[in-house]
Amino acid sequence: MKISIHSGLGNQLFQYTFFHYVMLKKELKYKIKIISSDTSRRDRSFEISGLLNYCSHHSEINSENNGTKSGVFMKLLTNYFFQFKEVNEFIFDEKAPSLITRFSRVHGYFQNWKYVDASFHIIGPEIDSFVKTVDVSTVKIPNRYIGIHIRRGDNLYTLKTMGSLSSKYYKKILLKINKTTSLPVVVFTDDVKGASDVLEIVSPDYLFGPSDLTVWQTLKLMSNSEYLITANSTFSWWAAILGFKAHRIKKVFIPDPWFRAWKTPVSTAFQFPSFETEKAEFIQQDHFDTEYRLN
Image (cartoon, rainbow, N blue to C red):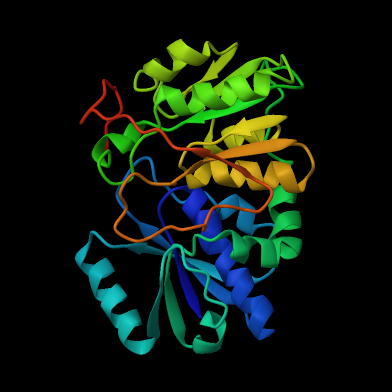
């Protein structure tokens, strides 16, 4: 069986989880081949190659360049010889593994907390082992803090569908937390200029942008927060679940609804039972000032 890995680190971890879920449910004896899909975006590189060194369940990684003639041909060829299966986004399908054979090629996002929870006893130690190797020793940051993730960047192109959370969302939650603690605030963002409206409101004690940390350093530091306010981002969702499961994070706050107007119902796909939901407030303008650019 082959599973394609694509999009950003958060989605890659959901895809990584799904192949473990399939192996667990089917009690597979053979290993799964990972396909690294080249999306030709500088901000969506294959991020889990290091993690796979700590995983004994995959056989190899194939690179697939969809932009070349040979890449397109190979994709068509493998789709012909393998049973291509698409798994619906956001929907937990307990019967999905029974429909997958050794000769299946599976594509999807597999974004649902139930896939993660069911296989966390396998993936948790693997991810934890790799994250321990991520060096953050030079990062000046306190031991206890409130972590905030602000996603702007590529949200510029999806403001009407995915949406980008406004300063109102973050302010409401921060006021809630500040009633019980006075910890310093650490903001992690992919777009410092684009997040300026939120930064003005939350007045962070520490700020890390995309040039300050690697994605894995950012994930590790977010997962070390005592309280974490996520964006509508699978990236900070994964930091939340890793930190919460390891008993480092006391409380996680996520937005509801997750998206502003997504074509497919998201429902409770990201609402892990121990996470607290807060009413999402999205920015209403059609654009924001940013230095972020897609290739």
